[in-house]
Length: 469
Ligand code: UDP
Image (cartoon, rainbow, N blue to C red; front, side):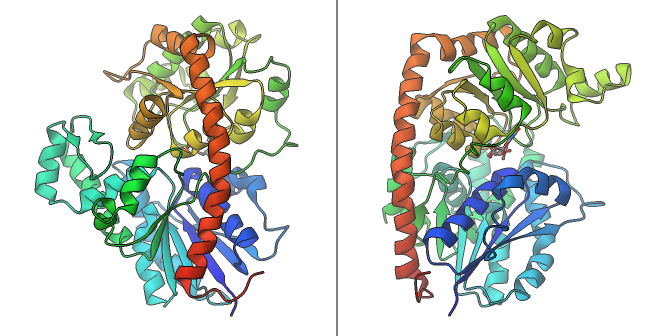
């Protein structure tokens, strides 16, 4: 019997990248004969160009990537990212079903990320032997999701709106910002609780993390009296860090520019694949970077569509390009020390470059892992949702980041400049750099152990292992 794994990723590079890495790993090291990855997206050309060289298809005909194109026109995509993406995945289910049905040989393992857990029912219906979830964020976020689902909705909601800390068994409590708009939050909470209930219908859960990053939470998942109980016996496997290795030969203007800069002298600034600052905050960040005098690479994205300050700018001056939102003369004044990139940069390669010495990040989990595997300390600037938990983890627990105080929603140029200086120039920053380099070593060792763990999972649990490749 051939072992064919099918992996499904919800929209966004943050989900696609680790699913692709897991797929490669299963095929290269763990006895799978064939892996098919479905990437759900509303923009196939853009997704294709983003995953670009991560494609292994040409090298190995048993690694197949397919796109599931969604038509989102006319769909209600208001609300948080969680509700939007969940809605998109819901809409993709009929296409996922028919795509999986057409596969040869029939898959025996199905893996989907946390936002696509509704598709686990499809795997059951198609009688796929093993169904797994890949959590593309932290174990702590998984803990929050499954624990919230185990609580009564009414009490939980009261708890969240009172701004308290949620005590998750065996874990660091999660602090919430006060819920400002209960009506919009109810929908998100319902989605999140649904996901939490569906996760525990899987045969196992992979998490893109490892012991040196989250020892306490992982221990709680292994403990039958703590999160093990909440998981109802469904095993949790830390398999991370699943990070695409930087490509040494990649050509890009940013890398050419970095080649000319001294070691660890450049601050890389990026807010992920979807994160957008307001137009006002973009200005403030520009002034802050200028004030520090440090070298920088900044991936500038257009402001959020619903940002009132952006539409003001737009109407007044017809600005459309991301760089139109920078202060007048900024590019000229900083041309000797800074490089502004529109919308996208090859992040793994930038972080792996020896000139990069710090990372101003929104703390998406992939960005956090990429910073750690490359030994780069961070300035944690979370925008929403679990990014705030990630920021807490890197600043308070792992001590590899300084955390920006977002406070009333806007960060002043002086604070930005101070944060950058703290990480790039001060004693505290030196310690963070040492800590993150130590963590880089530990996570590299653990990545090896995680692979061994997957083998063990495959042999003991799947029952569909018959031979090694
Ligand atoms: N990314 C990139 N270039 C960019 C912005 C993002 O290559 O300019 C990649 C980044 O390396 C990471 C992913 O996109 O792998 C973003 O994932 P993350 O979880 O950090 O944040 P999200 O985009 O999901 O908020």
